[in-house]
Length: 163
Image (cartoon, rainbow, N blue to C red; front, side):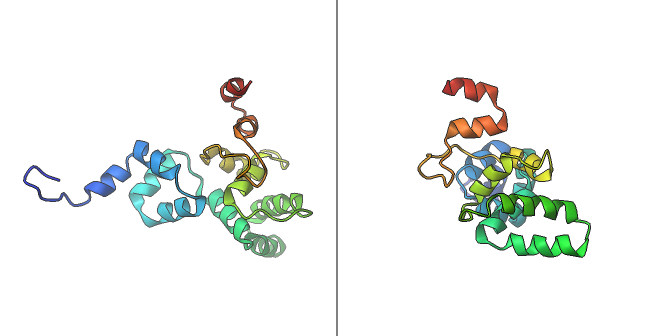
């Protein structure tokens, strides 16, 4: 508010778009909501990009959690379109989980992408940029704790803190 009590248009949006505030907000949002914020507002998009957010990987992980990405990737891989390599990586990720129930949490798919298995492709590079707060191992579909997350990210400092 201005000194005379009048509202300053866009002030709340300006504050939310600051990178330090964005991190606080984004860390508390589920991944689908972060994707929606990225698409809803240019300022949030810029703040998310400064934070390293990877929209294509986040979108794929959300779609996999809903169960819809695999069909799209199978179609893309069979048509020979320009996204064939990316579709192949997603299909490879799906095949690694084929024998188990597919995860329903998008962050679980991000963690599976962090495990690699397909080299250093775009999924792994994007997953490394998506910020995730360590969660309770009992709440995680993979039963991962902070130690697991630090190990797959290669964060030696965080690993040292656990040991």
